[in-house]
Length: 484
Ligand SMILES: [Mn+2]
Picture 1: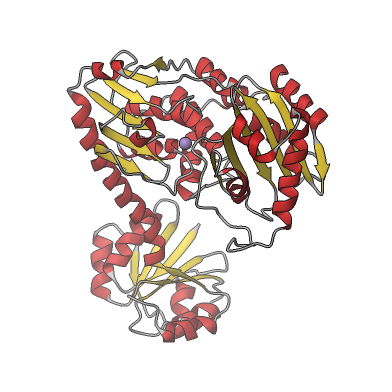
Picture 2: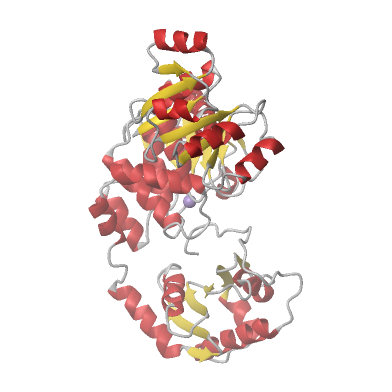
């Protein structure tokens, strides 16, 4: 495309020339003959002429198909230049603001030319300049911990219990950043992977998670935690070397290096930035793991997602194996899950768009939120409240749509006094001793539990709302493990 740039400043000319050639066939128009000669000598196509005269543009062969950029330094009005251009038939005209601040005069001038578009050099630079500076900052952070880990014999990358895709992918990514193999950097957890979809990921990507004991910690020279902070392990870890996490920052531990970004949707997003900043090769396996991690921690970019998550996703997408991601997502329905859904449906009660159910004894916690998620898909259901007995505890999972009231408030309202309860607007979980539940809510038989839960939901939803905001919003609290 042909482009004519009307400029006064040599720096602006050189910048545009570097940025736009060879994408655009550009010629510069300057008033100063000496400047035009200097540019010409530097190999930049330039000519001298009066930018306020129509014939200048006619000589330059400006047509409606020519893109015209007019530099506005703010000192002199560009009105007469724009008039001459309009008279010469130019319609693709841009005013490039390079002044400190757009002047009132420039604004008035632009208002008179509605077909002219405004660009600001500062705004155009901002994104890429901040991006480059951010990458430089990240690079120096990463290089610091890389150096610190370099001379260690054995490194432990520690994940939270029952590691999820974000933890697994982050473990792989950190190992690549440390330039280590599976024998010199162990990915470990105190409780291994149990959920079917996480097992599937670990198998498909051949990620081995070593089972740890408190004693085995002594075998390692350096310890890093990813997707979790050391307070999670009680007093087990007094001091670690590196923490990378996206959960709210906690205190009560010592670490040499940390990168904690609670506004990020996943730890894999932070590690994508680390890999990009240091130009570490991202293998297809790692890209696939990280892409899946971002998708799963952000519920496919629909929860707690920021710009960085979207950027990391876009960056990883072409590097990953989409067929493998699909396979990992797979059919989430297993026979075991379906059996528990069936039990939920059989015990369930539907009352005012609330579906309450009790699935009885379950071998694992995760079946309870699975059934709650499943039931929320039913037509006309706005809330699902599901419980199950796991060992000697009752696990209660709450899901809702439309955020009419906060699920986290619901579980706190009824269960904080007898157990653990927490969550955010759309998802919440409570874990209480079964005895304490029976004492407080008096179900005579287990078959009455669903009815009790329905009562609690109805009462809660009819209570006047105090302090809790009515409108949808982002709850600050986040479940400690996704799917809770
Ligand atoms: Mn995570």
